[in-house]
Figure (cartoon, protein in one colour):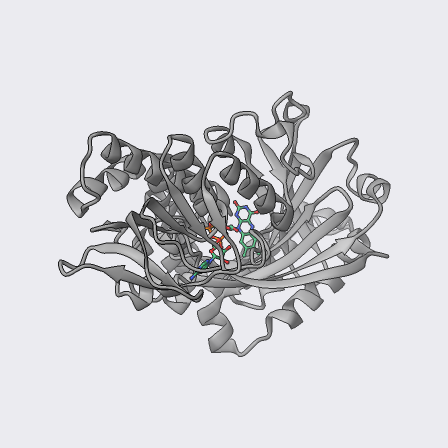
Length: 437
Ligand SMILES: Cc1cc2nc3c(=O)[nH]c(=O)nc-3n(C[C@H](O)[C@H](O)[C@H](O)COP(=O)(O)OP(=O)(O)OC[C@H]3O[C@@H](n4cnc5c(N)ncnc54)[C@H](O)[C@@H]3O)c2cc1C
């Protein structure tokens, strides 16, 4: 197909969560929108755990539950601290989550993104897949005025370009809009889909019709690196994965695949996936630099949203909701500028940042602004030493062997002091509390 000669109100690069949210919002407000996706179809390149947060999608498509491909609504969340043979867990399960409009769902991105993209098209946007945007086009005053793609034909022009190209953000980086994300600000996650019959999943996790459970785990599974393991129940499959900081992988030369194999073989995980058939395998980056890694978000003729803008809350494992919200807010800002016939200049597009600053997206990331550095520089203590100590303490406490309880408590305290020293324990607690404020 030859390239399009007409001019658009907006071009969106990428049909992931943020790009679809932006394209849908602008198209439903009557803007002429062109969206490019390099994948064969929207979602074909996308990887997520995946928990989807309903509130943020409701603000874009209120009746999404009518036809969106949703797997299970979550009624139970388990947080495990693991050593090599055990896990210490905090589980929260509530019947309240069996509500008429559940709050969180598991989804499979390949199906979900296709559905979202159908909504984008129905709202009036033009969506072109298998098309990679190769370059931003600028005018003599350096304003972004369009894009070039790998299709035949020349540049395509628009008043504003929305970069929703995901975590690596190559296009924006090449155009000098921001730096490449640093290895200590990005995690590499690997994930497998384990297929099992629906009733087996429900039996293993104590679920009934449509209910879901997720497990998120830290500890020796990340071999001293800053990382997280996850297990999410879908209708007829389990998503199982693990991710650690790229800088830690580089420093330790460990293989993500070996980590995933060890996780699958852990005695707490093995029975949950026993007998499953692995059909899909994926690897993807996750931005984890937090507030301090957020780049410039807007300029003359452009805005950046979602993972490309590093909008990801690693502490709460939330990304898609920040992506959808930033896409929606960018689109609403653009609609406002358009309505008052304003040019898409830096002076006008600052509205996007002003609106984003008022949302949970920036407020949450700001709250945890010191957490990424703390976890990165203390990964061995937080991800190995403390999980091991916690496990030893739990086992010591549970095992009834005639040792007086007072001696057990003393042994636990002595083990902690030996591992971290009194000063180390106090300083870790204070730094964690300060980063959590
Ligand atoms: C293993 C894993 C588990 C996760 N689990 C969760 C979870 O449970 N809950 C949660 O909320 N978040 C989770 N996340 C994070 C979440 O997936 C992201 O935050 C979210 O997908 C970001 O959306 P996005 O639209 O910004 O980017 P993406 O979804 O990555 O979309 C970017 C799109 O742009 C396209 N693209 C890139 N460059 C070009 C180009 N030059 N031209 C055309 N198209 C281009 C890509 O093909 C892609 O479709 C997880 C991430 C990973 C990797």
